[in-house]
Length: 113
Image 1 (cartoon, rainbow, N blue to C red):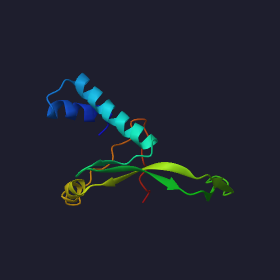
Image 2 (image 1 turned 90 degrees about the vertical axis):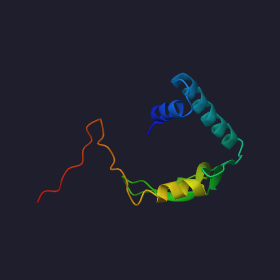
Image 3 (image 1 turned 30 degrees about the horizontal axis):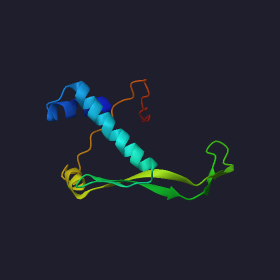
């Protein structure tokens, strides 16, 4: 699901026009973003919690050359799923949809036998 699909779902579930639903989704995302920028935690009971975590500086490797490189410390967004969301996902019975083929033509090759 992408943002357009989410807007369509919100419009249908809340009996809104797509324009109204789009504004509602944008407002919610903007509110979450602004709160995280301030370092605040956003808790949506049953759904989950958005927060900011500190990632320590570390040494990584350039994947092309293998040369070590310093990765600076930074703040990163985190999401922790709430109980209701975890239960909904667990109720899928292990069913996971296969990812769709890349529209740009990026197909995986089958191994030769």
